[in-house]
Structure formats: C-alpha cells, structure tokens
Amino acid sequence: MRARDLGLGWGDGPTGARNTITDVPGVRVGHRTLIAGGDIRTGVTAILPHGDNLFLEKVPAAVHVVNGFGKSAGLMQVEELGEVETPILLTNTFGVPACAETLIRHAVAGEPRIGRSTSTVNPVVLECNDGYLNDIQAMAVTPGDAASAIAATSEEMASGAVGAGTGMSCYGLKGGIGTSSRRLSLDRRDFHLGALVLANFGRPGDLRLPDGRRVDPRAEAPPERGSVIVVIATDVPLQARQLRRLAARAGAGIAWTGSFWGHGSGDIGLAFSTAHRLPHEPSTAFLPPRATLAEGRMDALFRAAAEATAEAVLDALAAAEPMRGYAGHRRRALRDLLAL
Image (cartoon, rainbow, N blue to C red; front, side, top):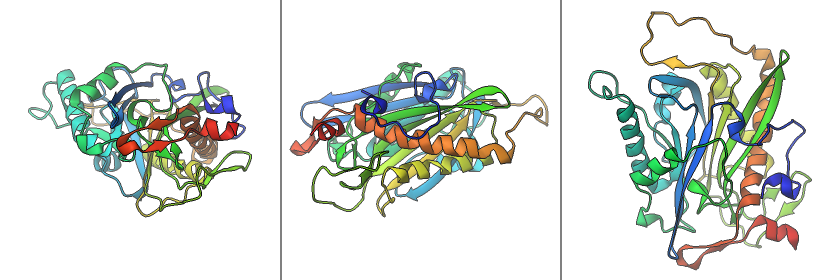
C-alpha cells in the first residue's frame, strides 16, 4: 500500500510514473530485510545513482545536516569534495561498520588500484537507531547483508518495513522506507526529482496529514529521540553547491509532517544529480563546460524536494504493517488508525 492509496498525496506537483526515487533515470534501489525470532527486525537499503563504476565515474552530491545526532560514515568527504563515489547504504546505527566494509570491498573489486596506486574510497553509509523494535546489540547486519542489498537493486522498489526500515518507528507508529517523486518541466524538457526516506522520528501525536488531521496513537508523548535520513536524486544538472541547497529543503518536508527535530534526533539530507559524471582521473586539467540550472529556477526543485520528502514520510507509514519485536515492543500501523 502506498500513501496515495490512503489519500495521503502531498502537494500539487505531478509525480513520475512509479512515484519513487527510481523515476530518476539510472537510479536503482535494493533491500535486504532481516527478521529472525522475536528480536531481530533490521536490514539494509542500497541506493545506486547509476549502474556503472561509481568510483571511476562519480556523481555530484552534497549533504545538509538538520540536526547532527547521528553516526553516519562518509559525510565529511561528500561535504568537502561535493561528490559520491560508492552506492549509498542505509542501515541501523550499529550496522554502519559492516556496510562500510562492504562498500570498500565493492569498490576495490571494481578498481583494484584503490588504496595502493590511487586514492582510497569514501564509503557513504547513513543510519537510524531501530533499537525499539530490534535488538540492536545483536549487531545482526553483516557485510554479506549489505552486499545482498546492492545485488538486489532495481527500478522496482518496495516501501514500508523493508531493508533498513524493517525495525524503524515514526510518530509512535510503524515507520520504515518511503519514497515519492515529482516530474518537472524546464525549458520544455522533462526532468525528475525523487526522495527516499528512512523514517524513524517524531513524537506520538505530532503527525499531521495533508488535510490537517493529527494522528495520535497514544496519549503519552516522550521526548523526540528518533532520526530521519532523506536521499534526494534528480537528473537536473546541478553543481554541488546547488545540491546542498536542495538537500536543505528536505527539512521543510519533514517539518510539514509535524517534526521539530529534537535534541536527540539525527536528521540528514543528501542530494545527488545524475545529469553528469565526474571522472576519477580526468584526461585534461580542465573539465569540459556543462549545463547548470540557473539559480532563479531553483524554486521549482525546492518545492518538489519538500513535497516529495513529506509524501515519502507518509508513504513509509502507509506501507508499514503492524510489528512486534524486541522485548515484546510493538508498533501499530497508520492504516489501522485511519480505519478506526
């Protein structure tokens, strides 16, 4: 079930054909879901900006940290150099090292010179804490699970309690992976922008639906200690500086759904463009000139990013089934509350 199946589309912008981040040409997503016994509820989600060798053909990218209570890997170099050179992996907090190892091995397999006769590689792993429904101390995520998520990438993708979203909670409900896209027309050409969200944030009772309704799964409202990762992809040609501005608009979409980014929340936006690639070893001192979106036209992308992010959060909630997990903890599904 998707957000729009429950009447929870956000904004007026037209969506892509799938209404997923994979509407951006070349982008693929894969999941590895781990459910075992009563305590393991976790996994890995992989996002590929393109299907070729990312280390040799990087994509421009940027990061915006809304609130930095997080343990992700690789963000410092993305911020400094403005590029991504590995698949982007999402997982739980204690799964970051296993995922980073997989990305390093994946890159070395494609370019054996890494770390020897050329530079090392910057693995990008983003995380949220799924410790309410998952026994996070079990450290169930392995390098093999991360490799499986990469191998499973495709244009078709699932939402809800899958991959990295398996054990996540959102606004006191079952959260997880959500996605949405927007179709844009610029100079009579069609482009796409897509958002993928790992939704694990929000106080119970703070969720706001597009029509203004508030959903409160219980009276108690504990402090905000969750996190959210938003990955934004587009085929609009943008520089890293512009992508940083775009990543910041994920915060608007998160806020529209009711979050205020609490002290203990790790809220991060990462944006990349597939419009052109950055060679690892340019053949000339100067890269050829490339088209770049005019600054005055950025508003169309800003709105698309905010709308797609907000709808992706609701998509995660709409797709997620009720779940019982670690220590008997349970989360109800949004769809069940809306049916009451």
